[in-house]
Length: 482
Ligand SMILES: Cc1cc2nc3c(=O)[nH]c(=O)nc-3n(C[C@H](O)[C@H](O)[C@H](O)COP(=O)(O)OP(=O)(O)OC[C@H]3O[C@@H](n4cnc5c(N)ncnc54)[C@H](O)[C@@H]3O)c2cc1C
Image 1 (cartoon, helix red, strand yellow):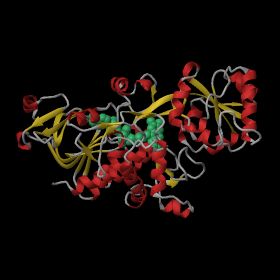
Image 2 (image 1 turned 90 degrees about the horizontal axis):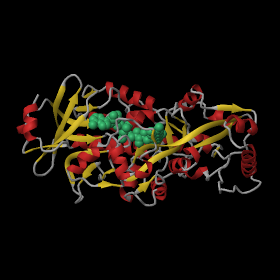
Image 3 (image 1 turned 90 degrees about the vertical axis):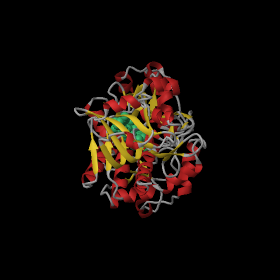
Image 4 (image 1 turned 45 degrees about the vertical axis):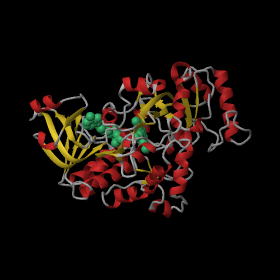
């Protein structure tokens, strides 16, 4: 251990600055150090190891997964073999346009196109090289995507995706993972800020100084850091946080201290359909397939089809910050394969009723108001009158038995982060790469606009995590000794 030495050189709680790597007695030496074992970190490690780099992943928690485990494993990709087999006409340009339209040109168009261009290669690489098969989700269109391009595993469960990534990792002798091993500081060289490694606090072992030729920040954003939320996104800082508790923002703070540019810090993804008080996601597919929401006055309050992220603020603005989501047997059966739905069911969140009147009584909603809301909705769904709130997407009118779930809005993850280039290298305020430093996923700037929840196109999160992770891992391995 080099504790004394660390104290001597310690000039910040976030960065240990030294004149040269020889000043330190390193405990660990690898080609690529990955901080964070979520989707971004695991994919980055695989991509680097495949190119023969020695890789160490350090994870703060006792398990891998982070938000990726909590996700529905939905990954957007354009030009995949599955899309082609299904006769879907898509292109890098169309996917790029969809992202830029949703975020109101709030992401770098070149980088956005680069990510779109690497989306199909990611899906094919996961299958062909790593044995991780995703299928095309074609039963409904997620809001904002012009064509069916979401790919997911059968269970729609991120936890299963993480298990498969860990299986793949276990086949590589050149990847090690340390759990309960938070990185607490980066180590950088004076005067060029070149990153040399990190200080890792490994449970039961203590402080370890890890030297790496390249370091990949894959530790997501600051959803679990209330102080940073208050500073950067006050509008959502007191909402329920539905993401992983490990995501406390230190990657952004380290980067900032090294001179990196932080961008889009007010942007985030939230969700307007989290079962309350159960705290389980009720998939947005329920809305996409024809469900709707009312507030405690029995009234609809917005066109639900505008997107699940911005919908959170609409729900939070209602009485008691809740709504009741209403759907029918057809929808219930169609979403049954989602493990989140089965969990909602097991927890008693999904209530079944013979009629809209019984549903009103079950949720203590004003009967007359709900009857009228339902009547209007059914007419619009049958195409007999325009929807008063402008919704155009209906499958068909709902038929009893009806189902209801009380839901609330929640923060899922932040979208602001470190500016990166086309190779996922972290850039400083002069647009120059900070030597040896990469970022992806929630630690890098997202593709979801400058601020607020509405720039988030469905599945932007795993897109940034997995694609930037793969790019970072590949580049870091190729340049491991430069
Ligand atoms: C309920 C839910 C559903 C979602 N569904 C989808 C979806 O279907 N599709 C989609 O595209 N997006 C979805 N998202 C968003 C998506 O999950 C995230 O954007 C994505 O998982 C981010 O991946 P990541 O690797 O950047 O971070 P994570 O998966 O969160 O991994 C970060 C890891 O870093 C670790 N860490 C943090 N600090 C340190 C430290 N100091 N040292 C070591 N380790 C550290 C954390 O413990 C964590 O394990 C969803 C989010 C939620 C909450």
